[in-house]
Image (cartoon, rainbow, N blue to C red):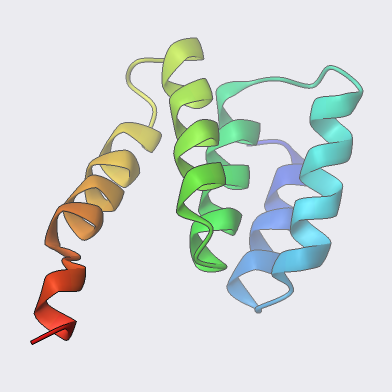
Length: 91
C-alpha cells in the first residue's frame, strides 16, 4: 500500500470518509487505478451506506486483481442486500 493510500485509509478509520472519497476519486481521475484504490473507494462508500457505488468500486478492484480483499467485501454487501427485505416492515 502506498503512503497516500495509508493516509486515506486512516481518514476512513477516523470517520473522515468524505475527505477520503474526494482524494480517492482524484487518484482515479488522474489514472491511478490499482486495485487497492478501488477497494478503498468501495470501503469508503460502504461506510457511507452507498451500496451501489461500493459495489461498483469493489467490482473494479476485483477486475484488476481477482485476489483483492474486495471480493470478501462484495460478498458481505450481497449478504446484507439479500437479508434486507422491505416486506418485513410492512405488515
